[in-house]
Image (cartoon, rainbow over all chains, first blue to last red; front, top):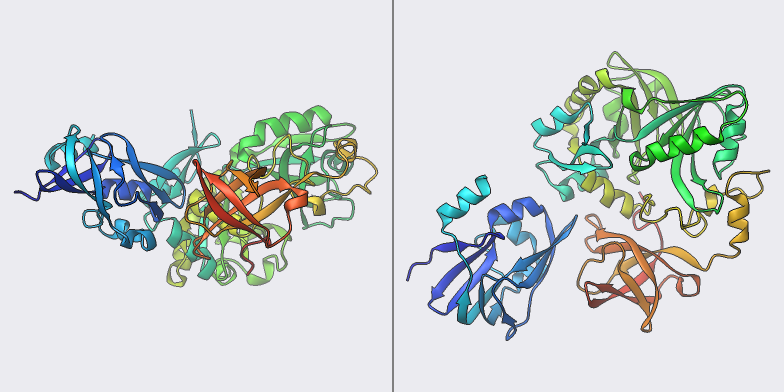
Length: 122
Length: 360
């Protein structure tokens, strides 16, 4: 199973760990556009997430933004480190996963890294 | 179509993230980011382009009488080189704008207004002028930069004769030579720190900006954007027009009673303010103790009863927790009162605290 990153047009990344389990975060481009993050609101373990619907929000000093789920499934675990250290996302967005989702039954239109780079270059 | 300030190219070159604000294109932040810019002002110094602010001259034999009529504060005993803060009200006692009034001499005053209200203010002031007084809007020819922070004085002293700089808060000097450029330098600001606001002609702005940044480089001076300007003024408990006050809110409710002189013979809005009677709402500071950040316009609850709304809110970079200001029922406005704020459908805990949140 490849551990490649796929992206949404709304700047989330998803990394499948197996066919029905994946980690989700936001892209480096997204963190740089948002600026210094100071608060992240995550769902709880056991919550359902749905393709294209907001499952978390991130607050920069200036504004709040929704984070949309690239998949439909159940939250298996959340990255608790982000609750106290939202700046981890600014430091390394591709490492700072938000949630791990299991039982994935649906996924949205996902872009390869190359396609995503083209999108943000536009 | 937004206007570029004379410093626009400097902002682009410094990696400024440009946003439209009150009809101008201005940097919300530079490469270092809002938190680093904020902390630079608290610990060292920051440089802001505030050229979007409006500047208006009122001059003539009756200049003072007109200003006395237009604003709520008393400018009668001002001396040359003094600055005074004042709301300007409509007949109903709502706030049209809040301003800084600079007395150049007994027949000439400079008034600095909010960019978003400039045209409204000029129209209002012109339509109320009486006697020997003329108003000139010099905003389009004038640049304004703010050098703020504990090291501001030592940095500016590298480019200007320190003895020529204003020494006290809310004092200014006209015609100060800053590195060969004639500037008006005032000891004012919107950050809660010591510092200066420096006014010059558009054509001198780039040179002044670059020389200031160079002079302060080793002291940690960095350019700062609108983002840090907002978090700094919020920590300092300073109101922002359109948030803590507007044409519906009286200056008393907005916590600006210190700048409303009801003993003054007359001014526009005096009757309106008196007719409103004892205010039923007041501005308070909130420390958010729950998880989340309350921005503006969040409903505020006390024992499940809505008692007001937040007017501004952010994460406080210096204090490290979220803060907000709110306009609430005066009966539930004492310090230490525990409240809840509705943040996008979620109730989070908050506590009323003293304003300002930060004091140097």
